[in-house]
Length: 186
Image (tube, rainbow, N blue to C red):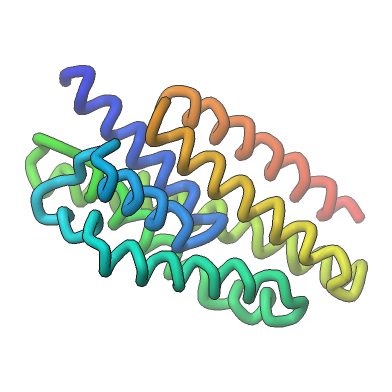
């Protein structure tokens, strides 16, 4: 395994995990990176750097971020977010990985990428549900804004420094674990 492959796996994993917070944010970040030539996606994913993809993902991101700011709508979105995040996480990982056999690429993407996105999406859904139950949804926009910032930060950092993004992810996993345990104790 060469360093380029390891970096592409870490990058894909970081972007995939970010999809657990917001599905379209890491896709948009990867699209912008591809459009400006900051990152070269796999040949079959070159369309991601097109103007059309950039516009479409920008609109989708704005709609998603806006919808999560509305209490009760955010809980409705949470019912479908886990499987959609898993799919997005899988696709993000595939788009960034290079030089592996397709069977290995897709297996790793489904297990690591889809799994990380689903785990984070599920955790944030539990957090938001707890917030809705305890505050009537008043704190949900704060939680949603924090999730959007996490998705944006981790996605952006992963493009420029995948190792730092991985460390941010570990810190995020630890924080979510502590937060969920605190909610369960109440």
